[in-house]
Image (cartoon, rainbow, N blue to C red):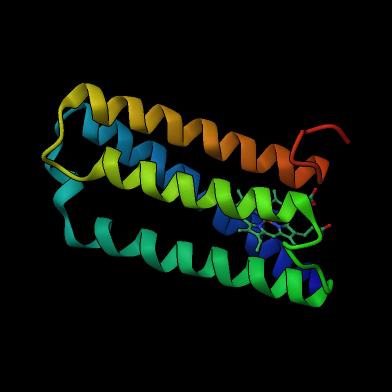
Length: 125
Ligand code: HEM
């Protein structure tokens, strides 16, 4: 069961970053694809699954972000990834701001994966 949830967690993480990169490319190209209804809905469904699997894994392992620094680091970086992603993908802001936010969100995601693998907020395993 744990293995299944972890697989769901990793696959939804891959879908999340894949979709985010794709939507970023559409943003750079001013593509109307970004305004499609399903493009706005599917990432929410996937990210909800990503978070639900994350919480399930933590509960199954009896891990708390209050005692596990790496878990807290992942949660904080995930919130930054979401906030920066909203700035990057919502129309209305200057193009330079949106591109900067998109790149910063990609860095956040890379940090989250590195924390997941090393189990350390400082990335030292
Ligand atoms: C974009 C967000 C996230 C990404 C990309 C991500 C990525 C990953 C990856 C790649 C693993 C597998 C690590 C390994 O087996 O070496 C993992 C495991 C895990 N993640 Fe996440 N994660 C994210 C969000 C979260 C959040 C917010 C939490 C906390 C509630 C969390 C909790 C966990 C737990 C508990 C494990 C299992 C660790 C283990 O089996 O030892 N993840 N995550």
